Length: 526
RNA sequence: GGGCCUGUAGCUCAGCCAGGUAGAGUAUCGGGCUUUUAACCCGAGGGUCCCGGGUCCGAAUCCCGGCAGGCCCGCCA
Image 1 (spheres, rainbow, N blue to C red):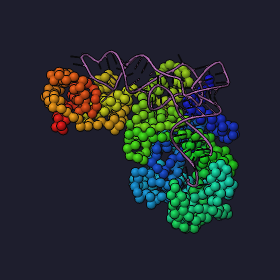
Image 2: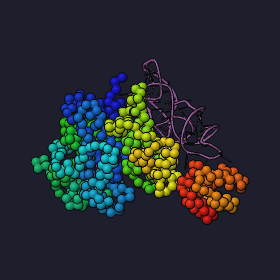
Image 3: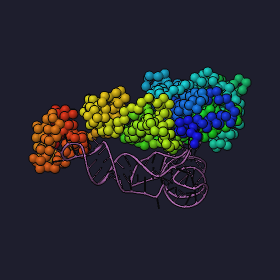
Image 4: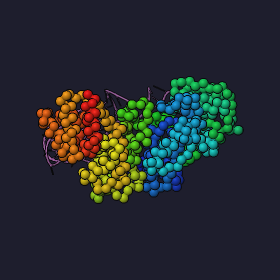
């Protein structure tokens, strides 16, 4: 069998792009791919998926021997349609303002839009993804697609007709697919443009207001006109992609199924109005929040790439995004440990000396290369099960977690010295353990006998693990209680669970005095 | 109204997009962890791959038709 590139779906996409370009007879000197960077809300993992996958296709194209470039395009001319959960109320005053004209609620960037796209850029950089950044506002200011906009507006009636045929939407039969920013109230979408004067390249509009997300937003009534070669307005989504593709010569762009209709229209516009064969597309499903503990707790809390990176490595995040493109992906913080271990598994396959014996192995090796952006390390890292690190992290005494986990690992003979990678991994697992494991040390009911036993235990515990372990058994025996039950009680007090690590050594680990204090407190509380 | 996704072990899911012996975690059971405690380690049992047809030497995987659940779009962008 002929294997394309590294054998993954990414290579297959790249291959199809190349084959399509060949059959179109277009130049293959530079194959440019694009993804949009949302700038209207806090970037979700799905937003990163879009960019990361486009970046991977670019790598696959290069790997197949073609020059390629990946453009990350920030849609910062878009108007704010809804204030995302958790952001300040005053943003409601800026509804329908272009996100690039809204102050940054976090006060660290020049605008709301810049802040949002910079969050995504931050995630991309943390993952090591390379890209060329472009801003919509800037593109309009520089008149980047004035030529295309002119063609579109000259043919607006034809396009309006096509939009109706493709999507059933009749709106653009009576108005131009262009949204001016109202010169008077500075908002976008509200002004209806009905006249295009091609001699002076101006649209004439009236700020009438529009319905956005089931709510009508009143316009200011201003009547004006604007030239289309500036950033005083933008093309409607139904035609804007086409203009962008044609002016930037984009050959590949993926899209989510939520904008499938817009893409269909844009393809038509690119092919029929702009004489630019539309880019090759891949449609992907949405990422859905499964609603892990954290997410469901505060409604509207977005599952950001940054959240993932608190608990998992960039490679684990890229594995999530690169594993496959078909199918709905459900997201949960609870899955991160699985992905961490899966990275180790495919790393082992990648570094195994054996010749890959099946397509399956070839794919996994390829996948491993992609999660390292085709720059895999020279040596495998130390593989310590993430779940083990979480267990250790969960019981690690406060304030010296890393030290505790490292010592345990040495004891287990899993590591000799902790290198930077191991430390990093431990830190991630500790974050997961402390924030997801929910160590709930609830109040526990103790009867008189148990109180007496604990009191006695406190005085017989020592700094010697074995002696302390023995002391627990001795006490249980003396009071004729099943050791099992006594252990359970102690676990509940010390860890909030019914079972746990060997207690003698653990008590020494957390510190004899601290253990005594916790036990004494439990007696007090009853 | 239009489009898409999912259905695999008791449970949660991977494998499907490039057809080649049915997988993992968890739960259950057994063993180990230099002497009674496991969340660690080793092992075992457990499947009508939703149903029906088709293609193929060969189908969980590809095609057609059902059933069940979910998501997206429907005059916002």
